[in-house]
Image 1 (cartoon, rainbow, N blue to C red):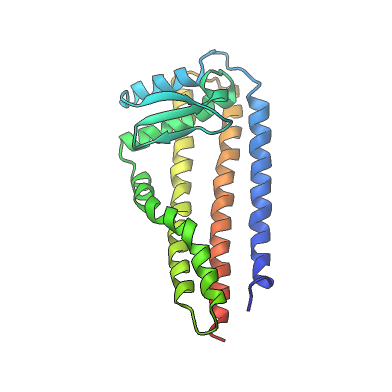
Image 2: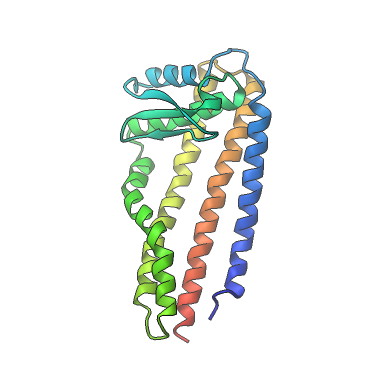
Length: 229
């Protein structure tokens, strides 16, 4: 059986990538949250203006507690910005606010990868919750019992698919954000460099999460395959 053995080594590169991504994100945010934009416009203001210009004026812009808790809720058409972004005019704040605005505009324009991700989400949510318990119950149930292991793998495939399809959604939102900030003149050329570094670091965290999900799936398949030996 591979469990607890060689298969675990598959996760080490993904774990290292996740640690690097988190470190880069914290470093970039800490640095560029202290650099103010010459336009002095806040994250909330730039989000509101970009939403209106993009035809998504019905989306509300709200402040939420926490750090880097920014997100767009498509069900309530609410763009929620963290305290460090909502009222800040830093390069990091404007980049993050524009990125979340990009998600709202994706929703407004029915961006296909976003629609696909929203469709997959319920399955992925269930899969990420139940996959491992079912798999390991099946693994411990005995050599002849593999049905629960197979169900766990199938559920986790949904979670992996969600993670994979998240990548183009996030990359596109960042591309939209930088283009909007540049075209509307909210950030100058040098200021865009700082905002881009923050968004690239954030994108790397999604790459790391996807790598971890894929390696976890490979690990499950290896363990499952050992039952046929």
